[in-house]
Image (cartoon, rainbow, N blue to C red; front, side, top):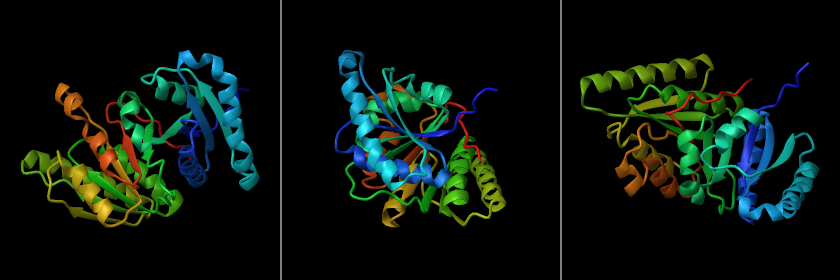
Length: 271
């Protein structure tokens, strides 16, 4: 009988002191969703002679965690993988459902996010505290993939008793308004099904600026997670001036940002 792999929360580490807050956020997420925590270091081929050193560094992280949290399932992983292929490999080979990375490294992982079938959680690795993920902000625009971000919010609502504030885009075009309305109906249906505390209000910005308005609300209301869709289309101008999700992560400060790729079907969390 084939072994059933446990779904994993992957934490991408740099093997520096800033790993501490990434790991703490990983422990929190793995505990919420009752999944295995996997501490991962993806090194370049030029560093292949240092693999033993890297293994020892990863192993040194395990003992204190196991002593404090003996019931937490935890593992380590050492890889040499291109950043573009990294999320798919983690998803296919290890049943990864969420990848945690440092917010300062968004540019490094931008290609990974754009090709990822797994959501990316960017946290400020230099922050003094980890998030409780209790108060979520969810922007809803005209894209049908908003159902994916609503689903992720529902996971936090179900397993962490999190409350959700939905910021609906305020588009002028009637067809766009209709699509936003349909997306809101999907959100409400999901949240009501699981009896998740939520509030919905109409924002002032169109779908193009909706996520930025949600970011402002998240920061001003001291929320502890912003859930956004990444870019559906990536243009040469985006590459030149920076993707909206990069700007949001850069401006988020200590606010964690969950980025979901609308360009791929996303892996879902199994109860």
